[in-house]
Length: 491
Ligand code: NAD
Image (cartoon, rainbow, N blue to C red; front, top):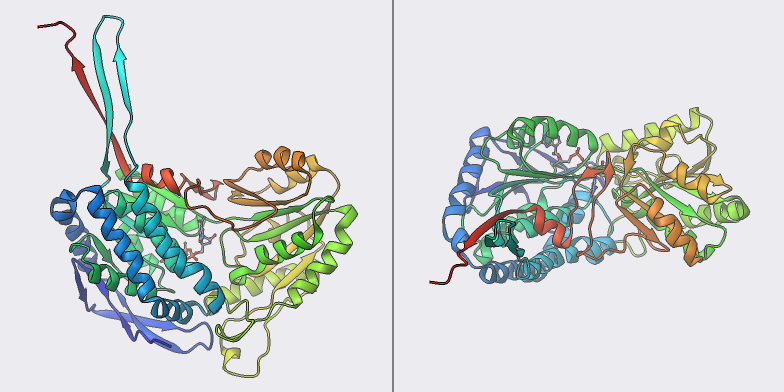
């Protein structure tokens, strides 16, 4: 496994040592794997300054085609160094090789290619305007970059989610400062190397490492940062929103979720069981889109639950590169304690634990890691904290319902609104129910099937704004209207 022993900040085209470092701990066995820099206030300031300067330099003069070409090179280089990226992501997160090589890293390359291509078609609007007083004008709009964009990303899909923001921000001509999660800095560090290797001009991409409540805070309150794009928990989002309020800066927020899956009596039960097992336990439940509440129609409830339990029990937990391993550990001891406390709380509240509910016993170094069992519970009310708060672990609560109207209202009864999955073979039901879900994204008979051109984001506490395709391009651009008066008199 590739060991990145010391991870440094990358500012103005240079890797820089920092005054202090903290430990990068493996979630597999609790051992230290690297030192991570904690950017100083001066380093944050120089990153912002470098980004501002870079906007005025070569980068600011580049045509869309030139920028697009460079971003394609970034994608190519990620693929050329694929195994290093895979190993780095696995070392930080412990997630399975299968997931990292099929989702995390390929999607990062795809993000750069998608937005590099979309930038070429990101055009403005044109209107010929006739006024009542007989004047005529040509109105058109141009897209300018926002300027310096601060990108704050989480640990659950580290490279994938960081590049989901970096790629469109750069494609639109901005300069960026990435602050990845302190839990997962390794692939961000490799990405900085890639940016350097392919010739992204100095100051265009800056990496500052460190903890959220120190480095993240200083970055979001920096007066010269022009926009903030954040993926993480709703509480951190609320905190950042207050911080940036005085500067009235553009913000894009992808936040938490408490997503429901609804299994109707006319579902293909095999597909629904496999789908709900996947949506509840993928990445050890650490995907914002994961299902934590499952509603099953009374007619098929018993059969469905028995099969779901069987599917959960069949999930192999273990070392990332062990054959057939599907899920690894949670990200940290702290997160393991949080998820376990929900397991305990559920038991205290009278939940029936159908499978899981604890920590697996390996009898080796992994017992010092952050592993946890996939867990299925029943018997709690919709109002119970287990059914209201985001747990972000491999747990789902299964409840029974009787009617379409009832289940829509119960599924919508949460402060979050990110995603929902509906399982039905009835076409009319699918079309009837999907638009009634109070979420940004509804899947029918599938889950986590993504097209990077579609709008992505949440309602309520799940976020502000949409990313994806034209939506990302719109967020990372400042549309500017130019109005040309046309003199109609012939000379
Ligand atoms: P988090 O909010 O703890 O941290 C996210 C990032 O914010 C990290 O880089 C962290 O260092 C930084 N941060 C923390 N405090 C900060 C502060 N005061 N100022 C500035 N930055 C700060 O979230 P997490 O635990 O890393 O990620 C899990 C959460 O992210 C879950 O709630 C999950 O639902 C959400 N998430 C949402 C989406 C989405 O697309 N909606 C995707 C992935 C994860």
